[in-house]
Length: 146
Image (tube, rainbow, N blue to C red; front, side, top):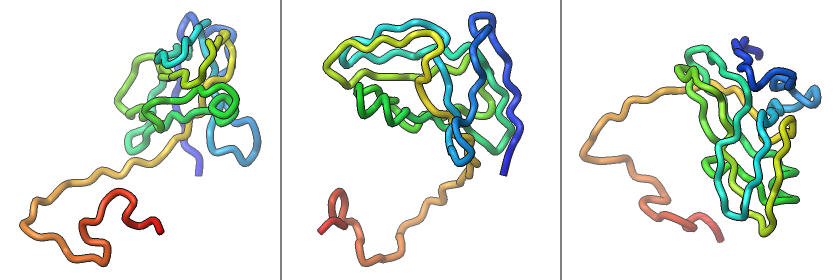
């Protein structure tokens, strides 16, 4: 299934590639940085992408880390997956954190994350006095691991 997402290039995004799939079977579109950034260990920073989007109602864009950056350098999205809502019209920024031990340099045009469009399901909570019983019950963290 494919959807159309309108994208507006901002002045500081001129000359950069728009988000795109790197292979036929890729789930996420690579997105690049529109600025140079130096991330110190444990530093968080919202990296500019140089564009804004109009996501269709009923969808979101999930922002996910690039596995190579995470493995090799400890660069991650601290709120992974991040969510870009369909009613947001500002510049898309990628919140990154350097979990590595070394300073990490991002250059304008470097691939920094993946974008995955996804269907949104909204819910309504219904308050009740009782919940149905299950085998697990109220056993929490780690209770299903053996």
